[in-house]
Image (tube, rainbow, N blue to C red):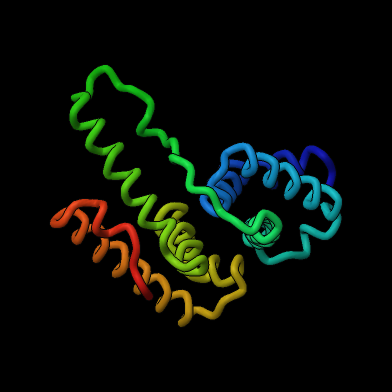
Length: 178
């Protein structure tokens, strides 16, 4: 694979890899560094990329492994307020609606941070990135049934905590077991 092919086939994955790394690391700058490291690894093995079934799934796997190594290295995970496209103001939208959407998104992201790591990765790949189950299976090297079970449990737990916090206030739903 030459530089031109690399630019057209691999570099377009940048945003997905960044969002995934950002979700795992909870740090925008560290996620950018992670994506850069992943691209260096992919560039160094560019001659072998064409032999893979899915270069994107492989890139996601490398990203996951790199991020998990970074998390293990720092031994603690900081919870950073996630910035999203919702923070961009649209003059035609009601500010109250925008604020409510932003608050809801932040609340859901905080709840997602409480999920076990595997559930958090699966729900991110499926519901946020829109990956198919088979792609998640390749990226995370987890069997399909495990993915389905974890996704179901993650969605159920998110729903449970969200509803509980709406009824009882967010301070009573900060932690959970399971």
